Image (cartoon, rainbow, N blue to C red; front, side, top):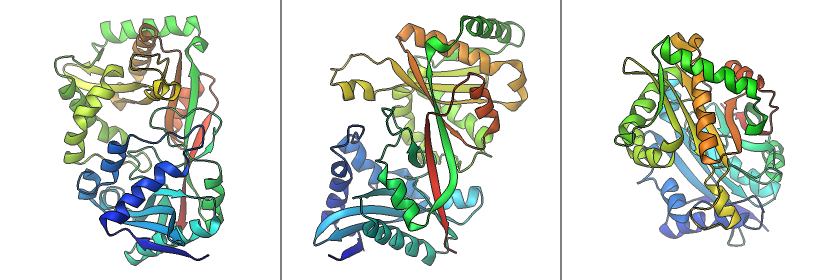
Length: 362
């Protein structure tokens, strides 16, 4: 039975594209499909602001008229200009466990990118590294946390079978808060007091009256901090403005900002794992006792003053108030020595690993 790959052109094709992804792994215990409207808007070129600075080709594989996989080849011109590079990307890769189908899809994506002057195909990234990148290659047995990509183990064999190799790993660690010793908690509390009293740096949650404004200040603070991070691209103005209301609502309660003289000098985000009630079938208001630590960013010129310790202290206090018992710390790029060394001091091994793959095509 021949595999055919063709671009998604009609509304009917797009509906079949949208239907395949949530269905192909519906029997996997750790798979959880995104809410339909959110899923649709993410792939809708008219809605997702990513397409203001990106080109893409949606590709669908069929066998005897039945959809057996899809992939998106895309070019992020903002990434190519910011780094700079000539990367071509792929994402939206969902496929049955069949090497022939995977090869056909990835081959079509590679050809599309090569024709447009890209020197490599790199992914999975859907759509950029601002989303959680890579394919899960360690930690399949662990229940995924909010926003963490999860696909079955056979995807690794398919990607490597096509000839893709490691470009970068991103690392995750799991922390049970009861593991944090009392001595460390007390030391962090002293640092938090010192940072405030001696250095005039206050750590606070977002303002209830102006959560969106505070979140915007944080997002505008981040680009210089993360500029050298692998794959990082600043948000476009539309991406920023369109995402602010949801960010303030979803991330706001766990977001902290450090200020000195009205200037943001640090920020951090701890997000409750909203997937827990959905997975457990608990009604709204049910138990959430796990969170995901998304990031911490501190201005280099104040990094030696203990701002990170002060922020960590405030997160521990908030976690205790809200009944959070465990935190998934993720992700950090494998070559981010500062972040990985800081987390390693807690004695936490890598528990989950995602891999971004690449293949030279230029």
